[in-house]
Image (tube, rainbow, N blue to C red):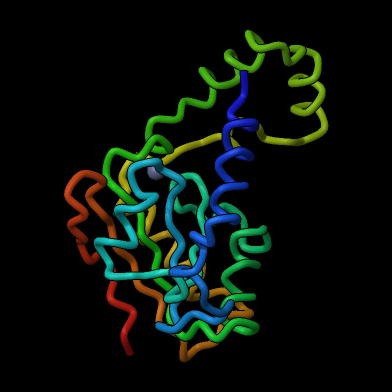
Length: 186
Ligand SMILES: [Zn+2]
């Protein structure tokens, strides 16, 4: 059983009854900011509410752990597109306490992969071809350190505009309280 049928049924009514009307806006962020945060379920509504953000206010990029794991990967590209193409003038990296990504154990996850049908030969073959799977799957210990690292990667990226402030924060996934880790205001 997947959720697909239920979602499509709900969607029909949503469109029919014009429930989208309160959300109509443009693709440009009114507050001219882009946020990089985590995919955690507790942040879906809490983060925008706790930061006073409504539909149309911001661009939000999400990755597990709010990590920029590669300077030329999809997350970094999204941030650059937000700045160059979509009028974002400020970047916020918002990690959170009790992040699932901080608990990721690469060895345990590789074992789970095998349990769920990935062939051990496949994993060995990838390792032989030089892919460091443990590094690829590695989480982080301390969220403040990890946010600081993402902030540094973005701030010092050779293609990032110098005048764009990059801030680092950590949000409490229960109360929504924000702790400032790095103030990028010039
Ligand atoms: Zn998380």
